Image 1: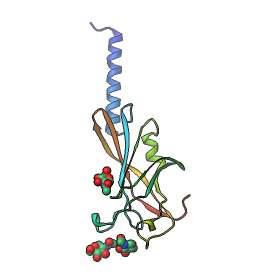
Image 2 (image 1 turned 90 degrees about the vertical axis):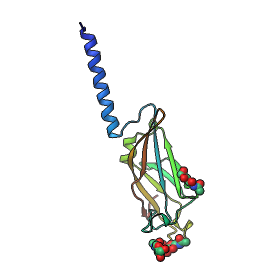
Image 3 (image 1 turned 120 degrees about the vertical axis):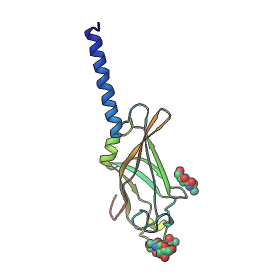
Image 4 (image 1 turned 180 degrees about the horizontal axis):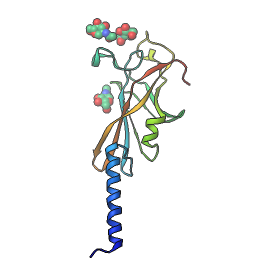
Length: 156
Ligand SMILES: *[C@@H]1O[C@H](CO)[C@@H](O)[C@H](O)[C@H]1NC(C)=O
Ligand SMILES: *[C@@H]1O[C@H](CO)[C@@H](O)[C@H](O)[C@H]1NC(C)=O
Ligand SMILES: *[C@@H]1O[C@H](CO)[C@@H](O)[C@H](O)[C@H]1NC(C)=O
């Protein structure tokens, strides 16, 4: 016959498993073995986004992409020759929920650097979007991408 403490333990376990499953389904896991990865490609266009010609759109290499949260630069990466950048964060450093609610990618490298006919002033800014989680060994990686850049004239 099962005693009360065992029943209590079993129901607590069931609640814990149900809670972590719900969390996983929401893609909000940022536990001890979690990582947050922000990846994207910057294009050499007036708004930094891919153009109507798709993959033939020229890219923006050697641009400094900052992750800013409430005005503070939390991390940064430089785009490579293909315009790609990648920023990896420890969820203990910044919470996924706060990245989604209060952080932006900011590019202050002038667009004229990749194409002289583009503006010499202004910053590209994009909020972030969660596209899903991938399991890499024991690591749960939350994958984020820029939700869409826009050119702002007077960001400091
Ligand atoms: C798209 O590609 C066509 C054909 O190569 C070219 O004429 C046009 O200028 C391109 N448009 C843009 C916005 O790059
Ligand atoms: C840039 O980074 C992307 C993603 O890691 C990679 O696929 C690509 O080959 C890199 N390009 C260059 C020129 O290094
Ligand atoms: C530079 O930008 C202009 C204006 O967007 C565009 O018409 C031109 O094709 C671009 N040049 C290159 C080399 O990408």
